[in-house]
Image (cartoon, rainbow, N blue to C red):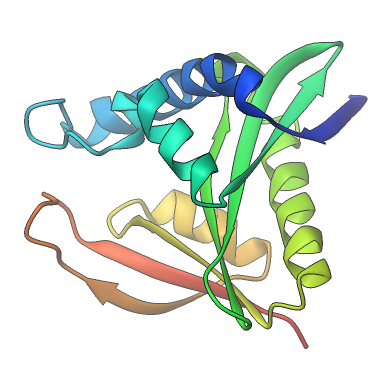
Length: 162
């Protein structure tokens, strides 16, 4: 399906919040994540979160299909070598159409333009289907870690540019 990916600005924040909340709700339901036990999970995304992220340099991209926003991804340059891929989200009714892969590839190309050597992402360690999906795109698991404020273990994955 034809689509275009464009860089977002602050006028896009409300649309991004809607996409992120809706896309991550299935994950929240599957893993029993609520606003009470996981207040920072993307299913609870807030306008002020994205405003704060944009203000500190995180770049958001939105994918539009047939003129409608259906997915997004964010890229944060951490240092000269590393970027973080964040907030990858595709509306549930638009999934399985290649939009997620297109967004990841776009983020990787942007990271490459920034001269990064590695792109990292954190996912719920028990979400093996998502980890397998990222592995098919060239990511590999590099570490697992527990955080006191999260009720799940995080698997960190990395994509290395050759």
